[in-house]
Length: 289
Image (cartoon, rainbow, N blue to C red; front, side, top):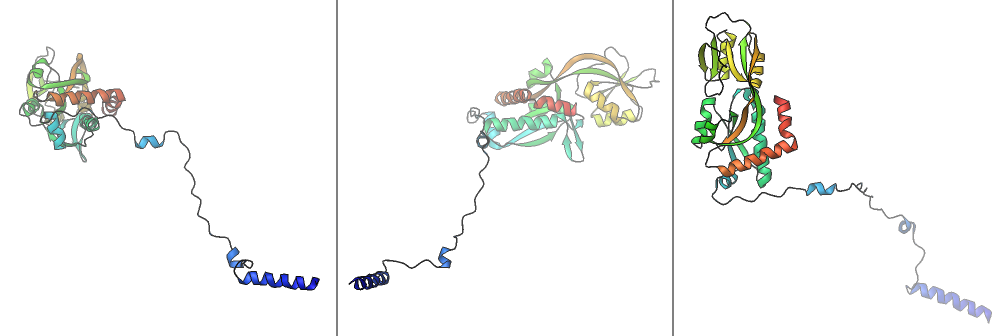
């Protein structure tokens, strides 16, 4: 009786396996470890790091359609008049225009681009000292950054910005003066006088012409701004020096626009203020002056 029961149990177990209700032990292949996904290291948690990608300033109020500033923004270009003959403010090198005012004009345009979220490109126009005011009056440029000192007379002709630099007016003199009547040089269109010094006044169109005349010993004195005088001393082959400060911080450099472009001037003034507050204006002065 007992043996019959055991036999039936064995048969029953075999039958169950054959019906698919039970599986044999898994093969070696089936028990092999499945490949796992490579672990990706987590970026370290840096507070607010991702926020940098989204930070931006609020845009300035869009100017009215048809206004001078709106037309400038729509054109994507800013016509900037600069000097190319007055180092260290603006001059030519083997890589192009360079100098304090070249960088300053670039920074002004960049800041306006930031304010209005519009990428603007600078179109340079090189002017002489005597061409600065007429070019603006004729609307030949949108912005002038060209060693222009503020005077009440100039303010009646063009719109002038906030002052971005003040400097001294000085007297530059040759180390050796032998003429009975000295030659006093002046650049056409510039301000300043010789402070009572008597002599023959000779006018030059550019500082390049002036340096050549200094090298030839044709110039005894020059009235100019201190940074320009210091550069001329380094540039001339003959010895010159600053012998007198004619006026202290009397030359106030300003940018300028056509008088009808008051909205453009307001954007320039805001840009200059932002450059000053950020320290970038002071950095440019340290770099060039």
